[in-house]
Length: 133
Image 1 (spheres, helix red, strand yellow):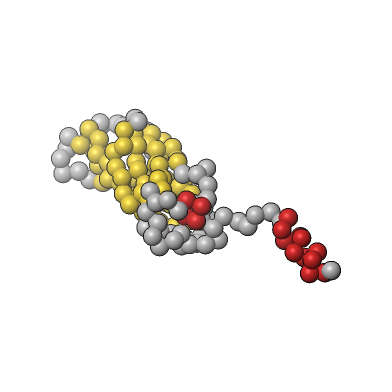
Image 2 (cartoon, rainbow, N blue to C red):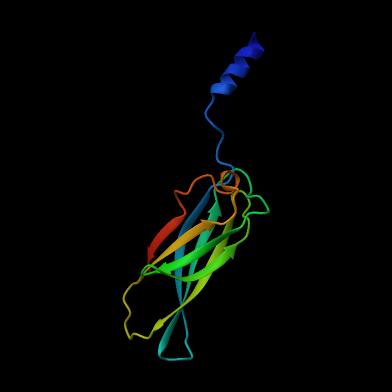
C-alpha cells in the first residue's frame, strides 16, 4: 500500500524545474577610442545565463541579436550554455560622432534556432531585454 501512495504522490507532484531557462541580463556599455573622428565607437555587452538545472543540449543552435530603432544592427551565435553558467555576448556599435551624446536605447533578442525548445529553453519570458545606455 505504501508504494502505491508514494507513486500517487509523485504522479500529482508539480512538474520538475526547467531543464534549461535562459535569461538575458546585465547590459554594459564601454566607449572605445575611434581612429575616425566622425564616428563614435561603443562595445555593448550583455550576459546570457542558463538559470536551469541542466545544460543545454550540445546540438543547440541559437543566436543573440542587437536591435536599435527596430533594425537589427548585429547578430552573433551563442554556444550551448551549461546549467547555472553565463555567456557574455559583445557587439561593436558605431554611431555618427556627437560631442555630447545622450543615452540611446537598444534591445537584445535571444533566438533559439534549433527545434529542441523544451530542452534548450523552456520559457521565452526572459529572452528580450531593452536597455538605455
